[in-house]
Length: 77
Image 1 (cartoon, rainbow, N blue to C red):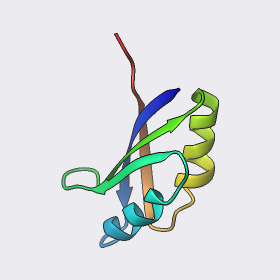
Image 2 (cartoon, rainbow, N blue to C red):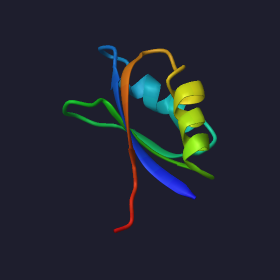
Image 3 (cartoon, one colour):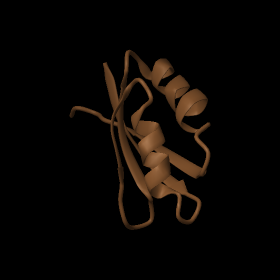
């Protein structure tokens, strides 16, 4: 199982709506609106890196109001 944090920038005033919509997507474990350079932080999981990429590109980035995403896979050192 691959876990990742996805940092999301949204259009002004859209953070809460984007977080709520993303929280409904299968594979997303948490979606919270935050302050700072990013508006929403998501924790997601997938079977492998390819499926994680599909989750981000095909599902998360299609949510209205998102302007940019940054995916940070979790590593175990």
